[in-house]
Image (cartoon, rainbow, N blue to C red):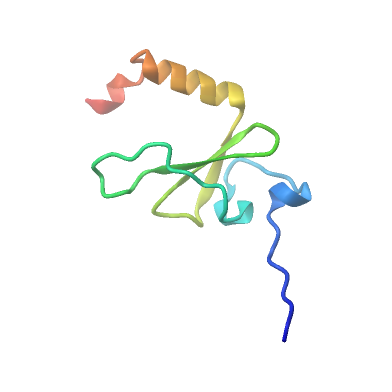
Length: 91
């Protein structure tokens, strides 16, 4: 019987995590859909990284690029969206 070790993700090995990297390199565990509307489940998935940054990927393309945001950037986006600053995207 072969003992194959699962491929470890860069967030476990301390490898460089960068904006636009293939999301699959971050592993498959830990991704969440923070919200889902009436779009059949097609939405964004987010993962909190060990260093506090947040990775975001498109749920329909889990192997595509991951966008990496700092905690401050995510906070500014969420607070701005709550305040209506992104409402122009809906019209």
